[in-house]
Length: 129
Image: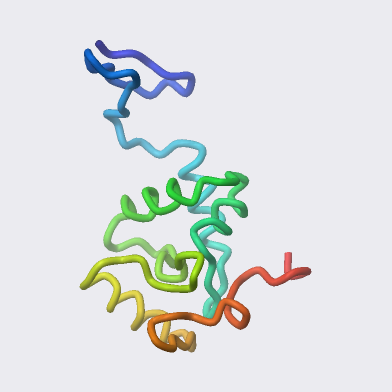
């Protein structure tokens, strides 16, 4: 059975399940907010999935940030490579992890043992916004 959610996107309810699944991948308000916040991250700085969610006004939505980044077009100009996990590590599998590492290093971000020092590179620092 097809249903429409509050934002007008079409969902599908499958029998025997308790929920619905989105069947359209149209941008929504959350996606737009994540992309706008990501565009603000300056070169040579990084954010965590959780802090990007907070910046987008979506607290506790770190997984949504990851899902949104995964759906970005390959040729996006958004700085997806500046997003790391809460430990300052790259979460992507290869070969994406190597691409992300190279992009960060090209911006002057240092990775030591596969980890970025968030004390140095995390954005924003208190008072920067």
